[in-house]
Each structure stands twice: as C-alpha cells, then as structure tokens.
Image (tube, rainbow, N blue to C red):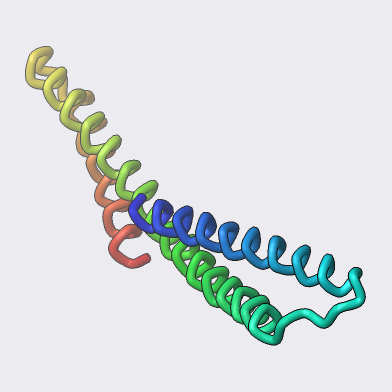
Length: 123
C-alpha cells in the first residue's frame, strides 16, 4: 500500500511539472506572438520541466510495479490464511462432534493452506 501511495505522490508531482511546463509554454507562445523572442531562461526551464517529468514518470512506474508485486503476494498469503481458518473451524467441529471425517476435512483444508503458503514463499 505504501508503494501505491508513493506512486500516487509521484504522479501528482508529474502533473505539477506538466502544469508548470504548460503555463511556461503558453507564456513563451504569447511572447513570440507579439513578435518578440522568448527569454532563454524560460526555454531552458521548459526543457528542465520536461526532463523532470520523464524522471518522475519512471519513478512512479517503478513504484506501481513494486506495489503490484506485493499485492500479488498478499493475495496468495490471504488464501493460505483463509484455508487455515477453515481448517481450525472444521477441526473444532470435529472435536465437538467426535466425527473422524470432519477431522480429515480439517487436515485437507490445512494442507491446501500449506500449499498456498509454499506458493507464497516461492513467488
């Protein structure tokens, strides 16, 4: 979740740079429409904004990719936890009812949970 928040922050910063660049481009266009030459500082600043936008975009994409990877791992571990909880609940039922088949179902559910846990570790 933190990576996704950082990516969102990067995209907001990217947008801010884009707005600054757009405002500066409009200013340059207005100056040139009046038949004057735009200041070199403004032209350099616009190029700088565009370069910074590219860097920020790369950072944001990297954070999003990391966030996706962590989320996929989370989904696998969540499945493991779900099957463990099911196994515990059915195990409790087997103790109360003293039925062997519920105990075996509980073991099976636990085994599926272990399978998801191993899959999470191997990912």
